Amino acid sequence: MLSTERFASGRDVCGTGAGWGGGEERAHLKRLYEETGSPPLRRLAASPGAGGRLSKSTIGNILNGKHPTLEQLTALLAAFGASRKTTVGMLAAYRRILAKLEPPAVYPCDIVERDENEREALHAQEEARRRYRGVEPEPELGWTTSSCATKGGGAAAAGDAGRQPQ
Image 1 (cartoon, one colour):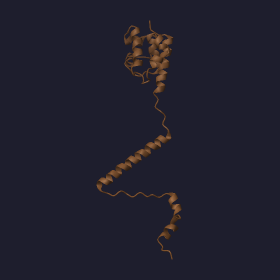
Image 2 (cartoon, helix red, strand yellow):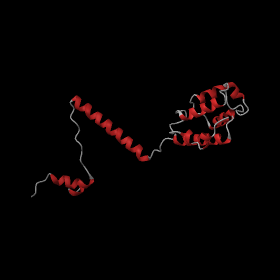
Image 3 (cartoon, one colour):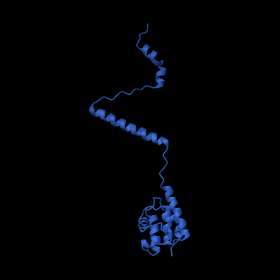
């Protein structure tokens, strides 16, 4: 009959979490298939365990590495005649694999940082084009609010700067 010990915990089935069909998960399903005597896929699809939820092409795709849905995996295990212990272990492994497939969350600052980096790269490209064409770079305005405040601030200070003391 089917060997259930290695599937009981689901630890072996989960593997490295590289995704379904990454090798180990598919190997365990193939092993189950071989332990059932490698019946024709058409007979597995017509079995009472599959309950009309699987076609022979779907079974073939899953055995060759296509990511099954939870319902497909459950039906396939039932078609193999897997024990309850094996089914529970495989489904637990399936859920752990799915949990690892989610991309990391993106935080709002990351979006802003990417935009700033893009803008800086475009600015650097534009400066390189200008230098290549012989166009002088535009002078940067080094104005800050603190420098305006220390010089007496505003237009009155700018107007007085050109006058001679009397």
